[in-house]
Image (tube, one colour):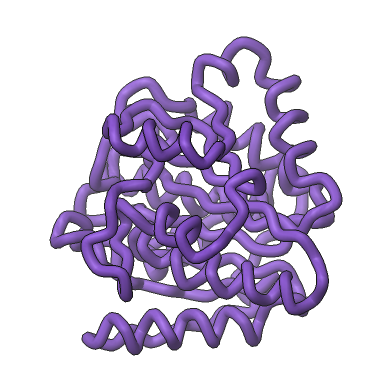
Length: 266
């Protein structure tokens, strides 16, 4: 698996600190000797790269788009953000790559928030609007599934309903975790899947190091179960892991959880 560090910050000055996440997560990953499947974990086993971030956000978004496009298709790739704004150039690139290859893309998002606010800047979507911008660009809403929303602006709910983005609530997941995880995996059947993980989908009791803590999320154990199941998907082509903020963390537990997620995706 290739790991690409993308320490982008475009969160309206609300996500400062996430730029430290990629290095911190890898530091924690270096302390994991094997994952729960018994597979040895070593940083030497990963192909690690970094996208350089420029003060010019338009230029940086273009660079992220092009670098991601050039790397899709070779092996599964994991992008370590950064805040959720990085998912816009990444998924936009994935969208174009799969279309050019004659395949159908699907995006599965784990997030406490839908990120569907009205755009502030059409050229460089923030972490609160990146998904809306992607839909406005032409990505088919029927190929988007959001899992874990538990706090949304009324305008976001209206947009969700208008365009028909599929969603699965925490309550639905709690009813039957195994069955609902099956449904998530079936959503991506016969498509190239991109998985976007905002760490705030996990309850802040287990992942306090993030910008928007929302009580009532998954436990770390529950979320690791879901990730272990999804890791079995041979059509899972790309993953991003975002919104880990080491400057807001408590005893590095969020970075450690993020590292464990990475290890289970290996």
